[in-house]
Amino acid sequence: MEAFQRIAGIILPVFLMIAAGYAYARLRGEVVKNDIAAVNRMSVELLCPLLLFSALASRDFDLVANLPLLFAGALIALGSALLAWPVARLFGYDVRTFVPPMMYNNCGNMGLPLAVLAFGSAGLSEAVALFMSCSLVYFTLGIALMESGRDAPRRASLRVFASPMMLAMITGMLFAALHLSPPVILLKALRMLGEASIPLMLLALGVRMMDVSLRSWRIGLVGAVVCPLSGLAVALLLDLILPLTAVQRGQMFLFASLPPAVFCFMMAENYQQEPDKVAAIVLLGNLAALGFVPLGLWLGM
Image 1 (cartoon, helix red, strand yellow):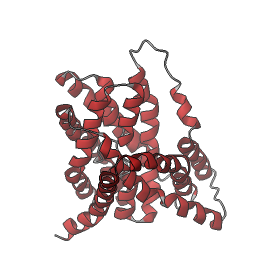
Image 2 (cartoon, rainbow, N blue to C red):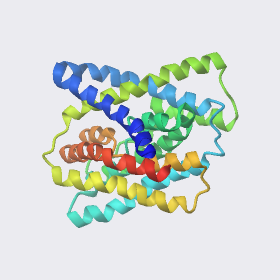
Image 3 (cartoon, rainbow, N blue to C red):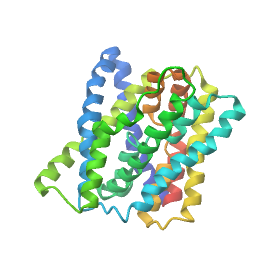
């Protein structure tokens, strides 16, 4: 009973904030969807990069100690893609539609707030390590997969390394590797600004749910189950191999249980890769997270 109350205390505030964003968007209509674009831009270009940099550059982040977790995040993303590939073939889905959302879970909008609630602010650095490794896999192999088999020339997926998010990660990793740290006052200001992105991301996620539908519910249902189950299967295997601390182990299982990221829908729309089907995967996946995230927390704790 105590474990259930702890898990409920972690996950319910996150979903209440998502529900608040959705309810506000339903109440106010299209104007909110237009306004949230500016909020998302500020979060992606300023607040989230500051959150990532401050977590990596702080004295709390030990690069060497978190190397197993970095490997875990990358291997879970890759392993989920490998397990999802035959499922896509079995059901006759286009692998460019089905596989990328399986390798990139909601470790940003949902994972970072959940990690803070579950493990405290000190656990943010581990969550950022997982977020970073997963992002690297998606923005290289995932984007390359979506670009495969097209007549149009491929876009340079390496351009992502010039984005504010990736620049913040790379700079933060350099600070961590060289054991550098900004002045305490500056770091505190950067962290306060960065932490403002957490509730904003959850509200924006709720607003974004207005754009997805259940027209392709069958592929959405399959994706909602395959994403967390494949992640947890890989995490169970890694738990036997990697030397993880108790907190790192908990972070890994939480990360593995997360649903597909809303960002996958935005990328599918950008590439015109059956965005309606990816939208259904994202929507049903985030609804199914009400069951799978508690499972991941239970396994990790």
